[in-house]
Image (cartoon, rainbow, N blue to C red; front, top):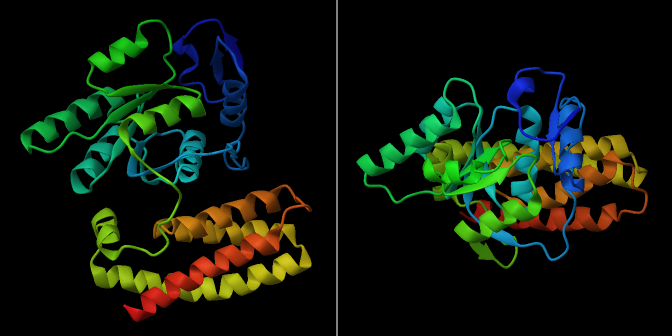
Length: 294
């Protein structure tokens, strides 16, 4: 980790060097450590917040760094937001043109097409197609004086520095997204999924059937692992359930699975695995009953 007193891009393309710029504070140091470590073996864990706010929205993320992708996904999940992920500016523009989003989080430095180029193309598309404007937020390591003004002048609606500060990104969510009291979306909305996943209704139903068949087996295995306090199996099964449930925007199931995964990862013997499992299981039963009636 290179500690620097001001922004400099000389380490931008050196894979084994991660820069950190003054001023240095705890969350910035924390996320820099995460970025510097091997993303394939690092479990990114966003610190919990008391009295967390939740927001409504589906977010398009344009970010090519794998560690940053995982961190941003976890932040959005913790705020009750769903997302689609792209790794370059070309993909970001294509995704934007074919689905509805409530916000775009755009990294400045990406391959094929950088963030500014992608933003200019999105703004031109909105104007040509007479689309309602979607807020575009720049995510950038360039935090020198004048950078914020330069980003806003280029057409972005807001600016978030890297490493991401939770208070800063929560303010952005608060400025542009509708807040909700809690994560209440339990049953998948087929019309919404059809629009976001670009699939036919029958394809979504087929995928949901596959999801439920797999869940029936995994929940039984997970309950057994919890009874045996097999932390490795708890982490593995909860991770799988979290990912598959996120695909269908089943946020309550996803949140419970994430708590089980994180606690299993650190072998937390004081965590109430059975209670969280019961919450997860009850939410899944609601989904299953509703789906079978439809």
